[in-house]
Length: 366
Ligand SMILES: Nc1ncnc2c1ncn2[C@@H]1O[C@H](COP(=O)(O)OP(=O)(O)OP(=O)(O)O)[C@@H](O)[C@H]1O
Ligand SMILES: [Mg+2]
Image (cartoon, rainbow, N blue to C red; front, side):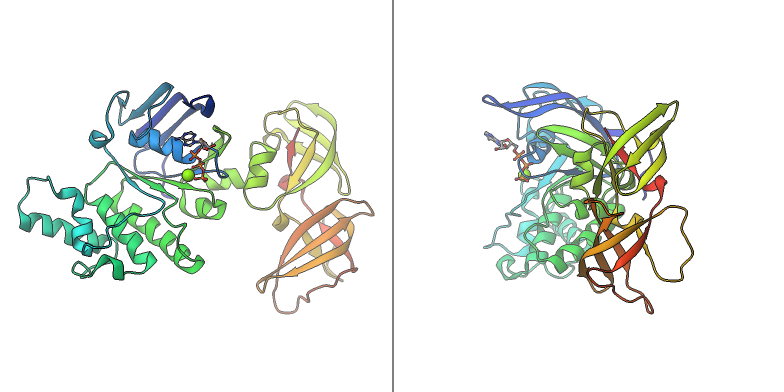
């Protein structure tokens, strides 16, 4: 992670609301995005990601609240004079133009000489790994190459903030993963603020310094990837990011900075208050990630905390095996993951197993 918390603020949202007619699309957005940060807006379809991005670009008026960019209130500031540029979901490049004409499109009213503009186009193409592609016809490019042209076209205008609305969603899995790494490198190289919209939680975790997780027009949590993964603020966030097991729990006592719980199938555990985010009034459950549970093989010494289980399902992934296991003679089923290493056999359905767990890995939702 290259992000440092003491960077200056680039974007600030203050209680931003947006209505489309009666529909309340943004419901009080607050938060800041730092200069030079790789920031993602993550959430399910329809939660308001594109709407929020468009309020930054100036393509969408807000109903109330304030959007600040680089210290200035953007109220009444039209899109074309904002220090932002947007790369769209369906990266509309012009197929009848050459690659260079596409990239230089935004410079058509630029007063620089032809030679200077050609130089700027060449630099932008080099930046996105398309050096020497200027004369190619845009329609003769692969999906990944078109995406790079769209990026070069946005970067040539030297925005302070680059807005990316699901820029990789049209690419196949391999190309998408490749472009994710390319985008991270590009962002480090140019150092400008990138704001990425995605509904793909893995993509957000891989790429971002920080992520705002959105549901139904609200930011549910704004944090760095590790915090989101290890300490999700709500059950909904936990469920959206990665896989999390939820186990019914009873709160036995709560005092100072400790919470004592009884988790069905696991047993008692004392949690630090940092493992118990703010109450939301839900029925209490503890959450734990598959990789925090471990199967103990015959002859392995007893773990500090372990419980018996029966394997209900085996899902083999090559490098990993996922097991669905009933815990301690209960109807509580958890998914756990084990790395496949030499000498560690894949177990079978019905096998009785020992499951080691750790109280520190639990998160309590209540
Ligand atoms: N111009 C519009 N008029 C009316 N409703 C709109 C308009 N644009 C968006 N909405 C509604 O606002 C909500 C948020 O839309 P938005 O496009 O921001 O979602 P999103 O999070 O980007 O979703 P997706 O992942 O599907 O792109 C949706 O319910 C959508 O139907
Ligand atoms: Mg969208």
